[in-house]
Image (cartoon, rainbow, N blue to C red; front, side):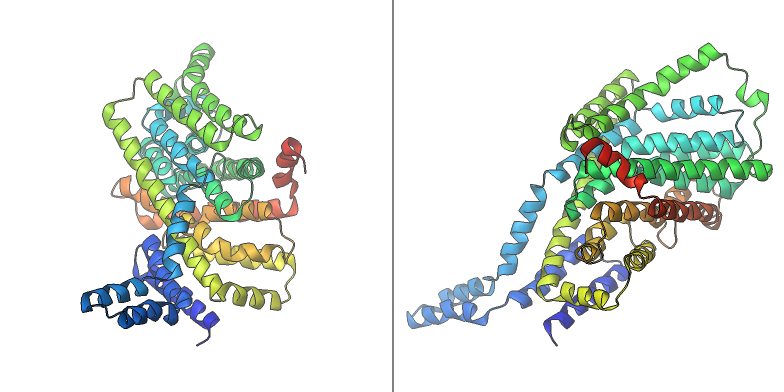
Length: 473
């Protein structure tokens, strides 16, 4: 077999291991080191020192040690160590644990329940008021955390039972929680965009600026669908009675907004604004955000030792997962490229003589399909880098491509068999709520995601306006 064929076999074995349920990060490292040993193997290097020891009359134990040293004298081990150090020293990834810590602290500060109640009362005259309040709360909370599981779980415990009690259709309510909870991987400050920036070399501040309008566009499409569905089919979202919401005076409502909405909104705007306007690097802004989250938790009298300990533990657990995925991916991709696999794929794709739009459509279809068995982290770290070298050939901006991918990856949380948002919700939903009902409720929101991608492609100014306005061309 030729080296490129071995590289393709390496990729095939990896995909098979994924479907068999092996841990992805360690599978990448094992395959990278295993195939890398073959790729960099030099028998003369291994036997040279051994033969020299034999000529010098070394004893048996020394010969065994010499042979073992020669066996491990392979450049793949140097590559593995260097890649591990590079990932741990990457300044872009330093922001990941800080943003995660901010999110986990805010999640445990009991801010969201007050925010949801306030928004529900404020939107009580809007069709589908509770669903609208849930979506806006999801958007704000997702922006503050970027942790899909945390948002879906918390809103599933808070808003989902309230909607079911208000006689909302189960599938409709499920779709609202699942779709709203995924917005955190798109709207800045998004962990996913940080990971894409580290993988692609695109400026994270430009990515944040470019993702803001598409993220708000998608949230707006969700709201349009929810309100439109409530108007056309009132049975899925019955209007609240006066007894349910009461008649809250304007002064009381304003006070509720000040105490529940403004602190979180100020934290988000301060962190995001300082990044977008160049007042702070993402790492510095994330540090300030983490401190702000602690202050909010103290102000709401929700900071306990147990909650702080849980936040630190979950932060380290998620950060370790992301970093080891990067280590494994970079070792795997380096060996894959060295064996000629990347060149083989590039030659095959460029040989198809596709137009840029056809390439974009093909790439997005592949990423959409990958979202069925994989989570966004594996797709961004492992598979998106396969497309990155092809962007220059098709004259596609990596920034624009990244935003399309970020929109597309909303679907990875909503489409079976993985559909992690659906499983998060099912885990805390009442027993009578079936998984098929949750999947059914997610389907209309998939249409909104695809529509948002079409709008972004037709009107690329949704991506480029803010970056060009703030940073220039």
